[in-house]
Image (tube, rainbow, N blue to C red; front, side, top):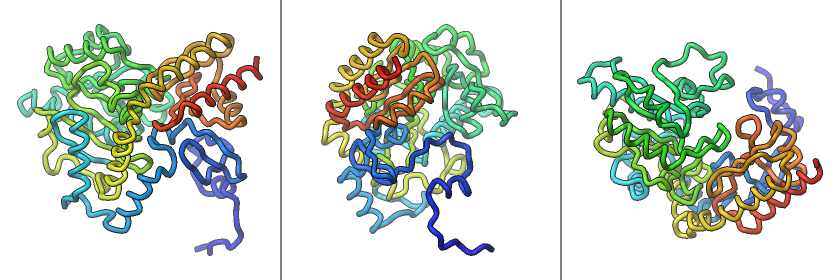
Length: 406
């Protein structure tokens, strides 16, 4: 075995030598964060409107969150799901307060939450078939969806860049057009178990479901005895001004997958399932080693405490509209570069007329971090506590960038 080198090596060199190259990383090494800002290893400061891709709901190093994680780390970190822990029970209660009566399963990520939803659909199909497996198993999803990179998640994600190289995939998925109920209805047959959509497509260009579409899917599921499954991994936990984005439509799903912002920076995912589907998971047919640990749940409880006590959902609802309108003003001011702005609350996509890569680099050079969505959409995901001044600054940086390219 080679002995570790005592020579100090740069982070960039360590990545080049030892880390797999499955990400197109920017030439940036981040070392510290506070609130809505991060600093790189040269001391340069950036306005972080990625939030770790919608993860850092409270920004970086929120005092309430830091204190809760430190306190729990010194008390009890992990015990497995063979035993109860108080934080998991309390977090499940808090989630049902927002989602409604039902039960909660905890996991580690959005991909795992979505995989669990697909397994619930299969179990529901078996129940609907009188216990016969393989008869009702089809799940209808939306084109341009993204549900994760597990085999189930990839199979529910009809994008070549996600599926390519991994076939054969899991069978039993069909795809309708987003916001077109008729296209989903045409795919329903006696093998269908569920309909599964993102309330707002995040990786697919920040494409929201209309209220009429979600309500239409609910009626379709009721008519055919299907489960309505919603992926709120990116758009949930207050990001749109409601705890879940589907709540704007007044629709009642049968199960919801969540993650990202739930832990405020600590990995945790969850599935909420309403009755009468909450008993589909039974001992032995689904599980996880790390899901719902005392430490993960402490981080999530601190995140929910801050969201509720600091009235961050109300803040997002009040500040999101003017911010989006200011961004739409840039579309009118620079139509050669910006073709559309869409989204809700603090989840916004600015559609460009060309590839996003060069624009993200230019924004970064001016001190604003954003993330791509699709091939031509800049996605802004600020922390839920981003101030009006920080939102305004993001608009000004984008304006400066567009003006320089005009």
